[in-house]
Length: 123
Image (cartoon, rainbow, N blue to C red; front, top):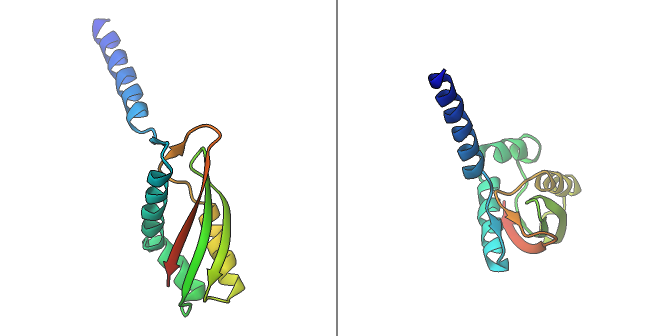
């Protein structure tokens, strides 16, 4: 009986410690948020998943895009806005918009906070 209780206690402890350690950090500083968004966007656009999807339909696309990304409390992308682009293919711009809008960042923001970050990418 004592072994079962100890085992249950161990499982509960491991579950809660895993839950606590796996939570995403809450960022409060706009500069830190901007750095994290930039770093994570670099990772996303260099990931094998993105490269594979881009090359499947848009292998010949080259150029630069300047975009504004609005991040909300949960770490989700709320808005995507193309500020400037040397790429004129509307299908590619829509692809980028859909891809970015489905992204969820590895951090959260304070309640009722949102930040707009400008990001430049070259293809």
